[in-house]
Amino acid sequence: MNLFRTSAAVLALTTGLLALPAHAEVVQENVSGDPMYTANAPAGYRMVGDILIARPMLLAATVIGTGLFIISLPFSALGGNVGEAAQELVVVPAKETFVRCLGCAVSGYRAD
Image (cartoon, one colour):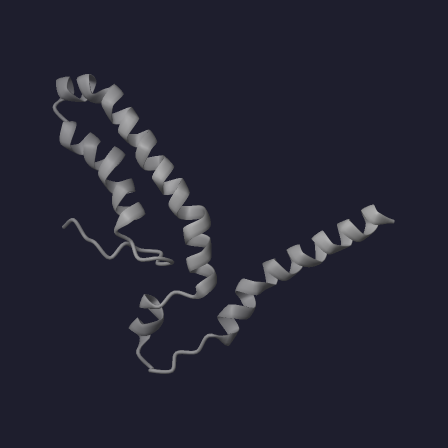
């Protein structure tokens, strides 16, 4: 009986959490009428997901990319593309980790 109650509780909580983003999108309104307001103001569930899932993964990608850059440095130096390797392996993940706003899908920083 205890296994049944535990399974039912887990199923109910999982279903509720999966329905939360759909419900949050319906409730959110653009009061100002400005389309940039909704683009620059992410919902709370996106912020929570960003801080709990995306940022730790991006930090790990930055650390792993830095290690790979150090390992590949002699080869990229011989090939003459140290700048490109540093940009793609270290700088891009670091910018997404530390510069992008919390919950935003696109970084506000442009390297044009």
